[in-house]
Image 1: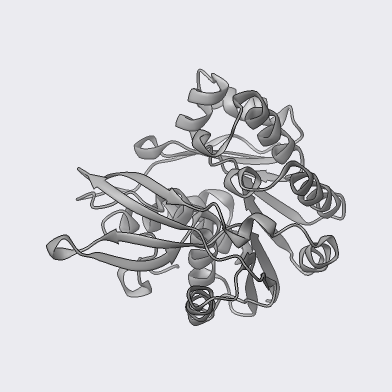
Image 2 (image 1 turned 45 degrees about the horizontal axis):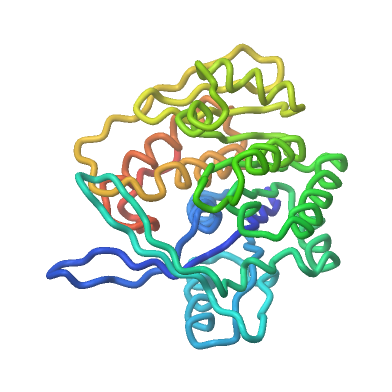
Length: 306
């Protein structure tokens, strides 16, 4: 079995709490987190690639070395003089997270500024993943460049996957945010939304309403994540399915819960699992991830795929 997954977005420097009031440096970001977990569980023969932009500074060099060390391909990562990676700090209280960000000079904001490079990378992917954060950090013209290429990929039969991952702090206008996220959904064949985001920002009264709204935008396959309430699947015209959340004994850090679900879910679909089995496995991965600190948890601490 051979294939390729391409994830498009921003990887940042992550500062997380450590013992004695110290901070530990890592590298993470919603689309890269998804890519990391997809690489861990991808079937043999599959390539997992990341498309972003970084600077030419020492921190960018270290980030590229780290990404390569995870087995994720870096051939589609541009180097931009005068820019550098963004940075964020995780604040934890009772296992729940909040963030402080520094990304004004982030090179990833320019990831779609070379349309030819963007098209060439997307053409090589069987699965193409992007998020609402990817759209939020780009200038309006760059958003349209990216969405045009994703619409082209969808029309060619590729699986284009979108997680709206709604972060209102990244948007200057709520109306533009909703319109851009809906445009992202129209470019996708599969959606991986979180119900609490959709209820808050689109006013959905139920998971079913979220599904029907996105089906109305032309999305064929939808998996709505709803935390401890599990995941609801609507794939094509098949019967709607609910997959329970996996049990969690102790929540340490909810960072990357949704991202780890996304990556392991897509990897198991690529391996040939049906959506319900893929979701059940991904739920187990997410449950394990939130029992540890940080966005990226080592493979040996995660469940084995069947």
